[in-house]
Length: 285
Image (cartoon, rainbow, N blue to C red):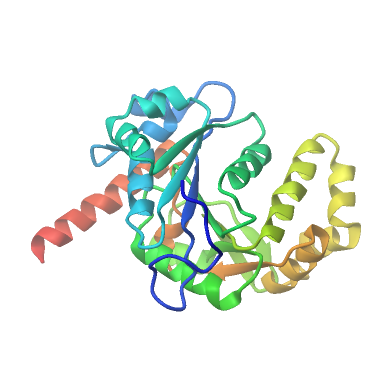
């Protein structure tokens, strides 16, 4: 991977953030993986979507983006990824690096950011199960991130947007005074200060069995205001930014598909249905 000359490089349209490096998180949680087993895959990230391993699908879409030159795949089984011909070719061409993940998600993110040289350039982070990721989502997110210009940009989709498109889909929501939002698995670590967000996450992760310490890390007042839904999304992120030591901003996307990741079997069924519908529409056009 060539060293970056600065944060504003690449070939994306003017007014859009231009990361040269992207990270794909593909680590598994411990224990049996019911989804992988049901899909007949050796690894969840390698289950097939339209005849293509999901991880390969995400990597190819990232490398198709004008500014992205290199993708770091953080996966617990690099040998399985290396056995995929499409990934092996990208590795041989110097376009993909395989990085072994750790048992700690936050540590895996930190190691990926360091490998991507966040100190020199912005880094886009997504997940291997973002099976519907496409150019439209990337454009809207990176455009919003550049306009907001925070240290860390986080893509979110409102519950209203999701339920209008997928009324029966089950998603996990963060609830605020001005609405509920689901994550879209897109993050832009725009400046070196954004690394502090991953460090804060690591601190919280280490204290997960001691709730009172987690509350202390966030601040009792902030935690109470969040739990009682007294804060709007923007207000919550302003307070969180003070705790983290880096400015975090939400980038709302009005694309319901951006919040659909393949975390369970019903998600896989939904993704395949969406893609089948698109194929039918394309044939009829």
